[in-house]
Length: 433
Image (cartoon, rainbow, N blue to C red):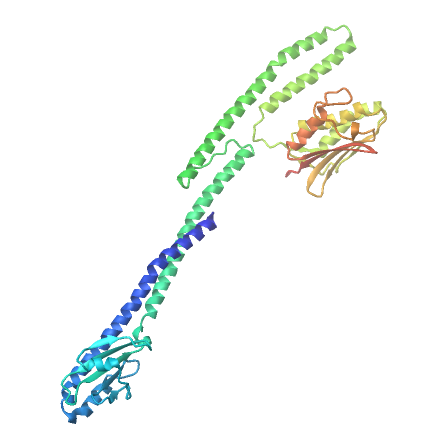
């Protein structure tokens, strides 16, 4: 935009200056020619007036020659006197008798432009004893337009200066427009990143000020809608606490202690899920979650280890040392839930005794990678089931939870079924510590 504005200004200014300076240049040229012609005419008339009495007598020819020679000089128009007998005195001693000279001998003074260029001024000398003599002043092309170079250079300098001034003003205007547009774009980027407190400053031309105002209205409206949505989610989760409490009381009244403990554990997990929903709904939108992927992997592996040992499984965990943090932009509880889902799938859908491995590593692309691999039969049909689909009687939502956890953090989700077993890989971008 800024470059386009500069090009447009340069082209417009150049066209306007061309339209103004070309006629002015031609006018300067014409004025210089008219001035040189006027000076030459005055010179010719003065010579004719001065030598008129001298030519009245044949004894004053020498005086006429001196007068003509006095007006000739370097860089001056050539002045000659053509006598009635066709002899010439002055700069050109051999002047051909042309039709113009014959016309001047009739008593007419005039100026004309010969084919060779320049101008000639012819003035008849009245009163000559032997007939009419003619004073001829020849102005060359160089003498005719002498003195025009300096004005032309001055006008060219003025034109260049005006173009540069126009470019400077256009650059300042372009910088203002581009700056206002970029600041507006940065505000939109902040809103897109979840910073609903970002507001645009109305500046620049009216159109940009209008866009900034509408963007601020949109941000305020989004904030209102999100706040209402989160409050509704929190209220709904809060209402679930009453029936959950009733379930806990019903579980405590069961006579079978083992069954009561099992149901109570399920109710506790449900309460924890409801609390998580409330906490997430009330979490500030701009809060940047961050968790140590390696630490979560070690902690969840240790949690599931007793059950794995009960099923005669070998569970191996490969992570960087505890002193090396692998920070990813995912809340710790969501990361733990995704990993629990993957480990639970291995324990539920592979034969007992099937070993599995949990691996956390940094990739060459400066990303973090979490892999859960087992040595079981792999996925049915060689691919992971879609959301809501399962070949083992479950809901089929476990892998979808892991997928959303990775993709919402601008990561990736990948599954593979190989002769060695099934492998699920979650990739996350790294964050600064």
